[in-house]
Image (cartoon, rainbow, N blue to C red; front, side, top):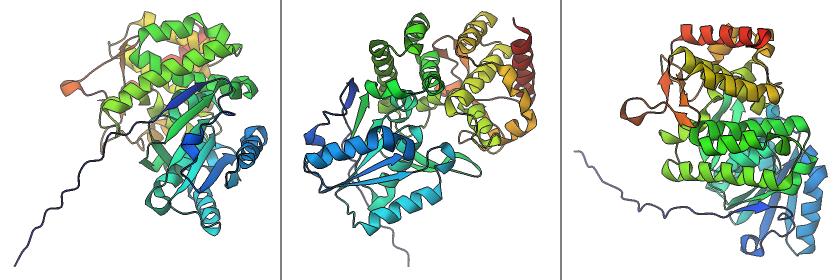
Length: 375
């Protein structure tokens, strides 16, 4: 005898959360966001702890909040199961319950890791993203992607778990080294190249102000980036199609990070990926050489040249790219441009496209040769 039952679970209401952008907003964190939680866990890395973690902890304690400060070694190589286990054990030992609130204070590594802990701790607790790097502000803090890395690749274990709020204090960028500023700027370049020619031109026009830490320009850059990403996430939270455009440059970027044992910063790896995937689009007749030159010139202004890839084995990078989340059993998929601010769409509006390995190899050879000899 066979019985079949159907369980119908009402869909949750759409998730909405505030994104606060400005200078000095960290000191004015809203009591409305904190008051309903009997315990707050502030998760950060050792570097950010010294810069802002201890300050924020004192600030909240002085306001009467019960707060636990947890930190771990900074760097992508610590975004792993071991670190997650250690932090969770510390939370359990301090009797953190389901009404605990996590504050993720730091860059993309902290946000991804703390967000994943929030997604899984006691089957899900709330968290607030407080990004302190440009990379986290323009990209990783918004959209609910959380996760950790493994020896097989980046972000292969994780969850979609939306934050309760995002608080981006532009003043935090004043302590950011120039290399880290560029590291984050690449993510804004990625967003604008795939989604908005107008915003890409804004970035080009204001590049010197950005590199000189002009607060008003940085705030506008963050606002423009977040607005585009928020619009995309609202349409495709689970990355079934449209949201994949935000992976432009990441197929090869993640592979390069893996091959380099994460010695290359994420943004720089994505920049190399953008150069490669843009050259692929050019070789496939989708993008004009003129537009490739514009992108290459911008990267050079940021100190990024494809000739630096000569130190790596192209075969290893291509092999590592097969671990990408967008890859299928037989093909590696890419986001390809057809113009500045416009992606190439395939059948049924698909944003990712399989590319033969021979074209990838030819693109590698082309960008490294052009970078070393100039154009």
